[in-house]
Every structure is written in structure tokens, then in C-alpha cells.
Length: 376
Image (tube, rainbow, N blue to C red; front, top):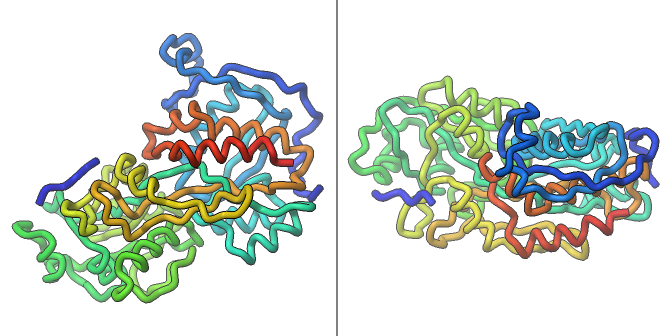
């Protein structure tokens, strides 16, 4: 079978207000923090003008799915804006949202949009405003596995639901064999691994199972893992580490974690004709079908998890930066706007292209860029 790879109080004072300056920022794709890139003419050709905010420390927290993107953005922004430190704690979407709603961070990263009740709570910390969702990161959630001698594995939503619900217990189960003719599948017990923390990545994965296999998956799609059985680990990095070391295991995490740990990933049989392997290109095709369902400046999106479009990888997520539309802390507002303006810019989006992320769809990116300057 051919595989297609295609005014609230937050305690975040930034110190004295600095004069806003424009600096040149190279959109680097490297993790090298040395100064040797400063004279690189290829990087200079990709430079973008960035307006810096106030000096001091800016606190943020949340999604581990966007950690690698955030690491790159922070490195680039701090290189341009001397004196501004951005501290992003990748502790999971649930923890990030709770920190935001408690007024402990200037913005939160989440792989799931705010729930209605969370929007109501946000009004307590967003003076005269409320929390809104700004799409910033697009990427596929890979399903990684560790099975000696099996380099290519195809699963569909129904079979995957049975595996993660502990109903399919061995790798040579007939349902898996039917999807992988000619593959020598061992009778190794299946060990599933899921997130132990409240996670937007979990919610996206569960939304896929619910939408694509409604008869086989009856659990509610939320940030907390609902099914019994399996092993749990903290964060995407923890799930990936456990899958890498345990023979017969399978788990879900962003594709960057699969690449970094050299973990084999499942190809999905979506009914499109050919199984689809997780890739940024395939994620882009799936996200292209997503719709903005938020109102006004809220840009929450609805993803088509049951898509059968050719080349579209359905387990794809949109990570949001959650921020107040009005009533932001005046001490942090300039820096929040400056940083988000960079992350949403063409240069910012391009800087994470080699880290397992796809650029925002053009029409979505343009809407995000119009909202950020209106934050107050």
C-alpha cells in the first residue's frame, strides 16, 4: 500500500517603560545562539522590522505543542530586543489557561480554544474585556510507535480507537493485519501511552477519534485523558520518551518530538485512497478546511477532523495564544503586542518552518495581524 507523504493585576511588571525602537530581526531556523549569524547575508535577506516593547521580563505559559516554535521566537525576539526577557513555561495547555485566568501570565498558549465558562472567568482578569484566541501555530499530531521490524504501519480511526481503549491488545490483532497486508506483525502486547497532564494535544487527538470513529470511541473530547488502561507521561516529551524506550508502545505527540527521538509514525487510512503520513504539508491541507467560529476579535477555529481530502492529515492542531482583548496590564501590553506581532509575521512564521510546523493559512494570518494592534 502506497503511503502519501506529503486594568487587571498580574504581577508582571516589566520595569520602567522604554522608548519603542525598531530593530532588524533575522528569521533564524537554527538553535545556535552564537553571534556568528549576525553577518550572514542569507539571513539578512530574510530580515523583518520588529518594534520592541518594554524592557524587563514577560511571563507566559501553556502548550508544549508549540514549545519548539516558542523557543525559536523567544531566541529571535530577545536577540533583537535587548533588555526584554520572555519566559515561556511549556507546562501544558490546561496549566497555561489556569495561569492566565489567575492573572499570573501575560498570555497563555493552548492547543484548544477557551471554553465558554473560561471566557466568563477571563472577564475577572481582563478589565472591561475578555480572553480571546489568536491562532499562531499549525502542526500535525503524529501517532508514534515502537515495534521492532515494522517500519511502515497503517491504522484507521476505528482501529486506533480500539487500541487506545484497550480493546485491541496485541499487534497481530486481525483488524491491524487487515490494514497491513504482507507485514509480519508480532504478537507483542500493545502498550498505549497518553498524557497525564491536561493537554490540548490530547483534546485534538480525542476530537479526531470522536469525529472519525464515532461508533468506536464514546468518550468526551477534553484535555484530560478519559479511557482506562495504558501508561501516562507528563507532556509530549514524556510520552515520546516512553514510546521510544518501550517495545510495543504507541502514543501521540507533535511531529517534532517524533523527529527528535527518531520514532516511527503511523500512516492514517482516512478513506482518501492512500494512507497519509504526518507532515507539515499534509497538516496544511487539513487546516485549510478549518473554519473560524469565534466572534469579533476571537479567532477560534473548527478543524475538520474527519476530512477525507486527498493528502490531508486529519490529526492536526491549531495552537492559540490566549490574551485579553481589553484590560491588559499596562506594564506588559507593549511587549505582548510586539512579541505577538513578530510571531504572526511572515518572518516569524517562516522561522519555525523547519521545526515541524506549517505557516498559518494566509487569510487566517492576515486576520490575526489585524487584531493584535487593537489589544488594549
